[in-house]
Image: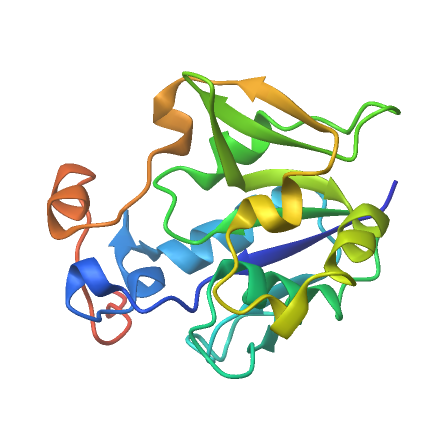
Length: 194
């Protein structure tokens, strides 16, 4: 099965005062670059980032939902149009360790439309692997391009296998405290090389 990836990186960052969370840095890399590397490491051929162009040097395709800030379903539907593979990784770009999260998602069983991480039974929709055809089938029925729709509107009717995983795999950065706890930093420009 071929694999592409949709990375969601265009949120408002409301809990961090409007800062661009995908540009936060961990271990010298932006969260976005870490997510791109995780998707590539999983074998994604094409990576589509739903966001304004945040890092022009990344080898990705940039798309934006219209109007912007329509939420993760709207962003996913906008990016889905650029996906060509049989399966697609769907990742939020604020994960602390996207490589470990993606590593927990193996190829899909024949009887499933997708799989997502679950910690304590809580579905982590935005850390998942889904069949492109199944997503397109449901997406065609969602009104208003998915604007302000809940992720369960897109994924709730699909046969999703839950992958039990420790909470650490779905750990993300939503607040300044989360960034500090992860040992991250904010950089308005790329760090200088020594």
